[in-house]
Length: 180
Image 1: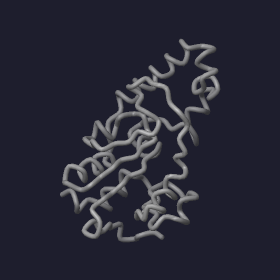
Image 2: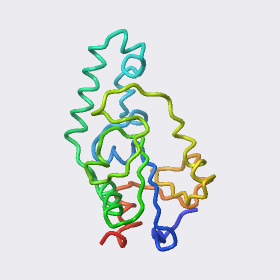
Image 3: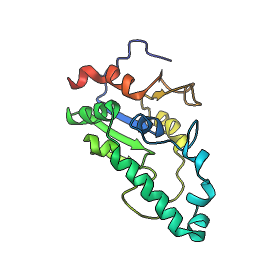
């Protein structure tokens, strides 16, 4: 269901959980992995994103991540990151659950962040995480699920609301009144 007015009633429930991925960061210039002009079109996923690739050529993998850290450092939070942070700063109970590792949510001022895949500035071992099932888990916990994406996804049929377009354009419309 799409809410054509792009308004969200926070008076009924001031708790908001944002599930963010590559789309929000791509609007700040961070390349995505998949899709048109994605990183995997230029780079071999097996070489740069597997333990075998790292064990085979650690120098190449470290250089690749250094390139990605440079991209993240040169990028700035966009309007969508800022709206999310302002909602938290305005006193709403905001949680950001992100697949992104670029630190842009934190740079925008968000504090309550769960980074599913870690943070590019923190080196550590990781394990697999089923991000695709998060909307269903949220629904099972009776959360109001709002999908924000460029196009329909499998979540569209289960979300309470779906909005299609750029996050930096839609989030200010959804929450602008709450942070001004």
